[in-house]
Length: 207
Image (cartoon, rainbow, N blue to C red; front, side, top):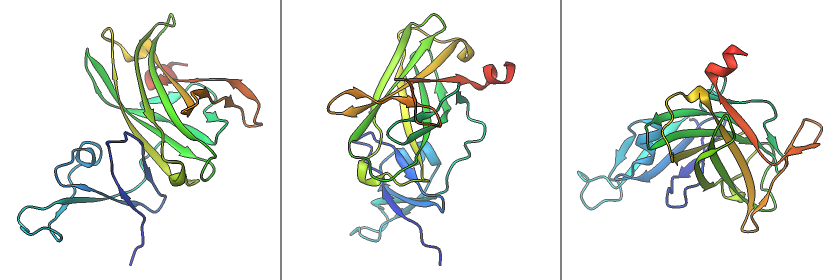
């Protein structure tokens, strides 16, 4: 039979969900909403419950998402010095109060020396930050080269966004708890700055 990694989804920590190339079996409590919200309904299980009609677990076999045409794609450089490569972000929901995204990224190396967080911001064309959400990236022992990590984000907005093409998504990565920013690098490893931008695909198409 098929052998795939098992990942317990713990959204208390807020970190990303790694999906291996061959697929990953996600497990959460049956009342949890993360698997349903991101991947649809799973399979309830009452195997360890005293009342089988009241399942306590939810499982879902998930395969890596397509990252070929994300709703928001990197403008240019996409690689951080610590080995995290940003693949893009897909829009989950947009309202006057917030923008919900699924940030897709991949580790290019295993188990970094430090723990890292993302700071993801919505920035207007004139450089004004109108939304920000900071979230842990992934527990360092779970970094595996080739996995695709899905980091769900809900970014509160200080003002509504009527046109997604009029804003950019700024991605910053920093070591935690030192709060030291990680450089963005080119293919040769040369530092380019301390953040990168994602732009809506309508802008990419017009370039």
